[in-house]
Amino acid sequence: MSIKQLSETLINQIAAGEVIERPASAAKELIENALDAGATRIEIATAGGGKTLLRVTDNGGGMAPVDLELAIRRHCTSKLDNSLTDIRTLGFRGEALPSIGSVARLSLLSRTAEASEGAEISVTGGKVEPVRPAAANRGTVVEVRDLFFATPARLKFLKSEKAEASAISDVVRRMAIAFPHVRFVLSGADRTTLEFPATGTDRLARIAQVLGRDFRDNAIEIDAEREGVRLTGFAGVPTFNRGNSLNQFAFVNGRPVQDKLVWSALRAAYAETIPHGRYPVAVLFMTIDPALVDVNVHPAKSDVRFRDPGLVRGLIIGAIREALAREGDRASTTGASGLMRAFRPEAQRPSAPWTPTASPYRPFETSPAPLRERQAGFAEFAAPSARSEPMFTPSAALPEEEQPQRHPLGAARAQLHENYIVAQTEDGLVIVDQHAAHERLVFEEMRNALHSRTVPAQALLIPEIVDLPEDDCDRLVSHAEEFAKLGLGIERFGPGAVAVRETPAMLGEMDAAGLIRQLADELAEWDTASGLKNKLEYLAATMACHGSVRSGRRMRPEEMNALLRQMEATPGSGQCNHGRPTYIELKLSDIERLFGRS
Image (tube, rainbow, N blue to C red; front, side, top):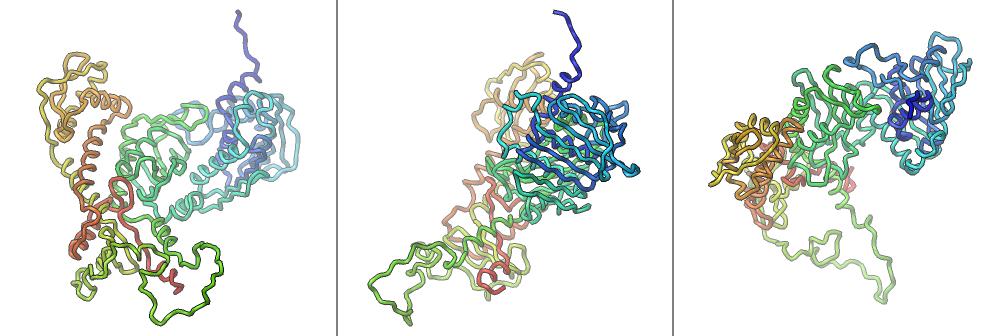
């Protein structure tokens, strides 16, 4: 079979399979072009989930008629010279517009600030029409109709209109976070209007527009730099978590990315602070020399490759953990919101329909029944464990140093159900789960002990020989000193094997070969081996859970206050080892609102 040259239209349709996977991909490319053109206002209109109509209007620099002719040709761009080592724009490949035009009905209407009139060009299934004059405002309007009409097979792989519209919304949200000085408006017949007014240089205000005001109240600012790589942004406190990863955003030099290295580092940074199956909320901005990152990995430009992935991973983990140690012990405001809902007055709660009875109406008696015998809004009043005798020292007897205004977590006032400590602060109250709080404190003490000295090791009677590729053996042996501090003794055993002579005593009997292979895989992927340390810390967490103050134990006032003081001095005490909150704070203004005093 002879070799032949493919037609330009077929080449563009093949390229469209990678560049334009769905309407959201087209929206992303068009919004990137608008941002590269210097737009400060971008409006996106859709119909049929973007399949029927996708229109992007911007107030950027616009294009001259001659530029319109080149814009719909492959590999024509104004954003790239002769090198891929200094890419400072979102787009640079010159493939988006010709790819869209080959599978849809595409029209471009544009005018520059200097021109007296605009120009328009259309492409239908790869067929280009001549440029013609047209009335236009400054900027560009790109309209895409009947996406994939020229490749019907691709239409079968698209999701429902609602799902495609949701994907476009996600693209707009990511772009809005990356460019807070730009106003974004998303509208269409198939959805309500979504608008993000410009916030200038206030990134947190724009993030709050996208993620909600709760994030502003539960965010910790991040600002770190290492070897020319700077990381800024905001990370949520551990107790402010979600059931999926949709609220995790990462940007490299302003470009939204979906990079497994970043997500892996984010998971590692929140290790042992968030329950399994829950995800942190974070927005990370990374600034790096363009020569040190490759954005030309995939035509969609959502994947990147770092020249030094270990540096980037270490920076993310270190910066977030330092921020959590600094402020992560504070409680999530969503806990207080849940507490407020639990304290709703009985009149606001749904009740069973009233039915008349034979008993006549009687007013309240002068000596009503005891409160715990009446059906109030809280079932705890009837709990058999409630006691009437005093269980705490009256506030008048508290020493001066235990007055609430002296401490962030206040002074202990009561212990409820032998598990919850109620403390009074200067502007509200705090409810502490004594078991969860003490569990975290014990774990931090054990972890500090692990990191401050060599972990005790147990020698194997017969060294275990693990066969591995030679490259894996080289990497493992280069980290032998690090492993020795954690109680794992290894040495080279020929060109393709490692001998394990000692294992950490804390782990008891273990699969040494499995551990070695896991560490080798981690070193090959990330150039770091944290699996052994994680195993030791997991065991420490389990021991802390069994060695902490148990629920049901009555504590003396001085013990409760000592627990509060230790929590204030321990980083990360706002959540237990399993990621649950250790305390909930309720402001005095919230309490007054419950009683209608504000």
